[in-house]
Image (tube, rainbow over the protein chains, first blue to last red):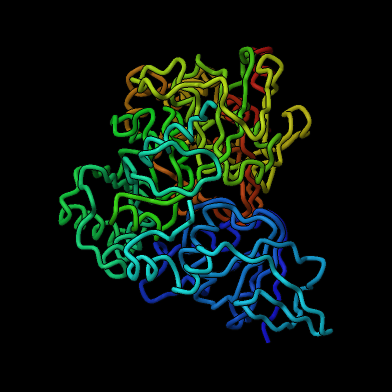
Length: 166
Length: 412
C-alpha cells in the first residue's frame, strides 16, 4: 500500500536535495536517491517505498533549477506528488521526468503515514476508511507525457513537443 | 491591446502574436549551461535524446562557475569532460574558471541583448532581465532539448508589475527594493508569471541584475527591468505599452524605503532592518550574481574606507565576474577592502551553493548579499543566513552585528 508523506509549505529544492549532495559532488558510483530529504527528513530515503505519495503545501519545489531534486524522487519511485501549487521549474522538471504532479490540497484529508490505494489513471486515492479522494484531472498534454514516461521518450517517439491545443 | 515585455519577446520568438495563457513553441536565442549540470545535460543530449551535435555552436554558452576552481578530483574530472565536449562540439563560447558567474558574464560579453530569449540551466537565469531579455531557468532535460532543437515550449506568462517611485535614501539600494518585493509578493507571489520592474532608469545594469535575479525568489519565470536608461541598443519593438495588461501591480516609494533584511530560512521573511533587533554575525559574505558586482564592491568600500573589520569578524568578497574584479583592482576598491581586512575569492558562485570557498559551520551566522537563505544552503543546516545589501554587509562587518549603514556614517 502506498504510504503518504506529508510536507509543509515552500519546500525548496535545497530541502529535497541540498546542493552539497548534487551528483556533481558525489562519487561516480553514488546515487542522488540516497540524499532525498537528507537533512529535512533524514528517515525518508531509507523508508520510502515504490508508489509512495508526497502530499505538500503550496510552492513545493521552489528555488533552484536542479533536476536532480525530482530525479532523486523518481529514483525513489515516488508515485505522485500532490500540492496546491508547484514552483514552476520543479513542475517542468517533474513532468519531463514523468513524475505525476497533481494540483490539490489534501493536507486536511490525509495524514503522514496513512496507507492508501492509488490509481494514477483515474486520479483516485482510496483511504483506509473507504473514502475515495478524486484528484483534479491533469491537462491532456500532461497525461500524454506521463504515459510516455517523460518528455525524452515523448520527443523521441513523436519528434515534437506535446500538442497543447494552442 | 498592448503587450507586456514577455508577450513582445515571446511573440517574436514564436513568429506570431501571442498573449498570456497560451502555450507556445519558441526559438531560443541562446542556451546557457554551467559546470554543475553540464555533465547530466551532455549525457541526456547524446545518450537519451540521441542527438550528435548541438543545434548551433555559436548560440551555446558554457560557463564553469558553480565550483570554480574545482575543489575535488571528481569535480575536476567532470570539468575536464565538459571542456573536451566543448572542443569536440566546436562550441564558440566557453567561459572557464575565474571568468565569473554566467549571468553577468554573458551580458559583459555582449551575448545577451535586450529582447532576446535565453534559457539557462540555473534558476537565476531570470538575471538576463537586467537588460530586458527574457531569461528563464530550466533543468537538465529542458536544456538538453533546447540544445538539440534550438527550441523550447512554455506557457506565455501573466505579468506582475513592480513600479518604483522616487530615489533611494543614502545606504539604501536595489537589493532593498528587491527584498521589499519578495516581502510584498511572497515566495509564490509570481509563480508562473513574469515580473516587470519599472521606475528605475537611473540604475546601472548590474543593479538591475539584483532585481532580475531576485525575481525567481517570488517564483517568476522571467524578471525584466524596463529598458529606459540602458546603454545597450534596444530593439524598436521592445517598449512599455500603455495598454499592456498586468495581473497585479505593486508600488514602492524608494524615498521612504528602509534597509531590508531577509531573516532565516526563507527569502520572503523580510523585515525593516530596524525591527530585527541586535543580530551578531560571524561572517559577512559579499558576492553572487545578485550583489557581487563592481558597484557592490564600491558600495561596500565606501563604508569600509579607513575602517577595520570588527574583532572576530571574517569578510569574504567573491566578485561576480573577472571584469568586476579588474575594475575594482583598477580604481582602488580592492585595496580598501583588503586594508579593512576582507579577503577576495575567485570570481564565480563561491559559497552560495554551499560547496566551497567559505561554507558555514553549525550555529554560524552569515550576513550574505546573495539571493537565498534556505536552511543548509551555504553549508551546515544549523547555520543562519541573513540576506541584505552590500551597504548593510559592510556596516555589519565593521560593527559585528547587523547594522544600518547610516549608523556608521553618523558616528564617523
